[in-house]
Image 1 (cartoon, rainbow, N blue to C red):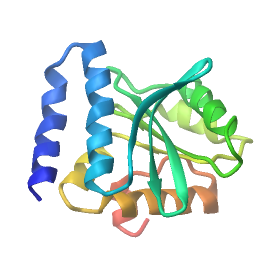
Image 2 (image 1 turned 135 degrees about the vertical axis):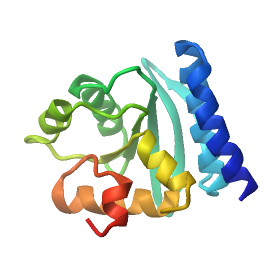
Image 3 (image 1 turned 120 degrees about the vertical axis):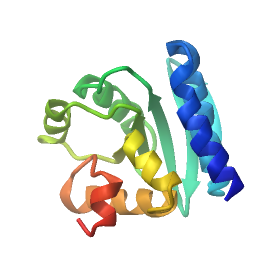
Length: 165
């Protein structure tokens, strides 16, 4: 519980950092969260021509991670780039795209039209619900992955999932 309280405080404190510094600190925060959940995290790494912000293993599934902390919600373009990174790996690869300020509604709609997905999304509200104990990180990932498999939806808020939605 102490680790979770520290992580919650760390997430709040990230808001005071300069943009580039904040981005790297956000990656480290997520890696610590994955470690606290015993998910065998790996910090950011480079492969020829691309960078992956980290990865973790949940059961038999390895998730590649993209972490974005922009002042505004991101659009479809960022999702497509990461979708390409995940899709360019093994056929069983999965991705977790974490955008602190979420994704624009148009971006979500455009991204989910006419393409299958092997990735799920989270935003800061999801992280705060998780850190407040409303749902564990593992349950959130599993429920989001199931929803994506059943409906093709890349992003469903933890709040909605916790209410049975």
